[in-house]
Image (tube, rainbow, N blue to C red; front, side, top):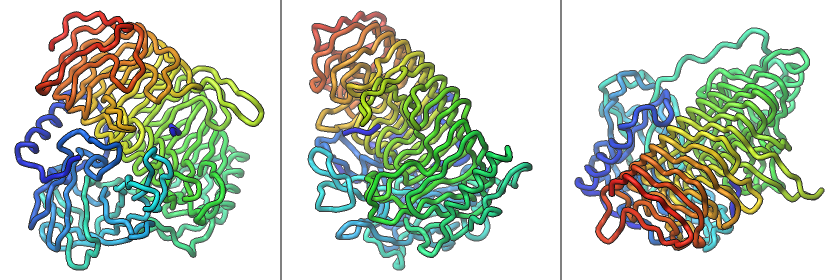
Length: 608
């Protein structure tokens, strides 16, 4: 959505506690996305020669960020000296030929980032240099979160981590082999904060399908892949060639084929398509890369603006340095129409991944990593639409977003140059089996208005600033929320101290974005698991006919279930709270509290 610590070496006891909590979160089968890769947290690896784990050990007392707060697992491994190393064993049962590293290296003294390598070893033998950079991280903000640019004079830093990927040089890493990241003397960054790595063995590139037009046949030129957060300045601009190919495919009733390689869109123009299929050789092989001259003067449209189309099997990236237009930020995929599909797309370094409206569309099996704003926002306004009905987001992996990881965003009206425009409330939106990790600004998942929604079996972890799962409405111009189910979700280490509020892991009601307006009514919140919330596990604001039932809260860092937290206006409304379990509450905290005389809570069968 567009919206206005403690550090120490982790003890073995804390590690054991964290491991047991993490194991508990995966006790529920079928939660989160099924991915072709395996993730290894750095803190779960074996540390060598003084490498240290840095972890979040208490709820933040400041409104600002820290690297441990923004890391997955709220912990990372710091490599600060030569020969320091973290290693893992390949226990996937498969060969590993591709690695993705989420890490942080220092910013340049004046901002704008730097580059460095880190060394990969296999079975103790050097294999290759991995390119890392901080050109697309380290942004700075003021006391009220203003600015958000790469100028250190703007204030406090955040967005510490970025992700870099590469194919393994030489033979794949076999099952049972060890592999490590090591800082050697030729790795020149002062520190390497390693958060998590993803490893996999991608399938062979897909072949061009029949009845398709390859963009190379229209003059698009494959160029070298971007390295260190920058494109090739001598690359050919393929924008016009690709758009010409799209036009041909539309007129000839053919699909558009993106072969292996990186194809540059140089400048600010995007690609517009309607009623076709656009597909590539796979997210590891075919890339569309927007290379915007910086600084950029004006706001940017999305890289793809597609209507009633299918897009699949490629990678989208850009050179943007923050979410601000001056730094080249524009969306990846704006979508509307009917029965559209977006699948197997890997998106990075854009303003939003999917900004999507219409009827009967699906976003599935995608990766969204290092996104400046929303990962996947299902709404009723994208590309001048006025409806958002029967949209689905399922089995997507989202990590490191600068706003909501995923959202249902039902807008009631917008004020435009031509007057106030009204939209139909969204209905029957489904968000299931998604994994959303490390939202460093915004919620992991926001449910904002509409009716008939199902939000189920999502895995949410490690928010840095705001609520993990918010159920309500957005702003004064958002739609009211009615008759929806929030069930079977797992929420781990979530909540945040945005604006010094101490927000809960799961919030129900209006007012979560600063406006105590609107209706949130007839919502079932059931069978969710909330583990190690940074503050309260579940918080209520104004809402009616809420059914909170059979939820499990374990080891909240503050309270269990709270009605009327201090930073919300005194709520009114009603809820039936039954058969919930709260355990592991610390001394001086409470499993349940109702601080509002205007909110009627009916309790039965709870275990606390």
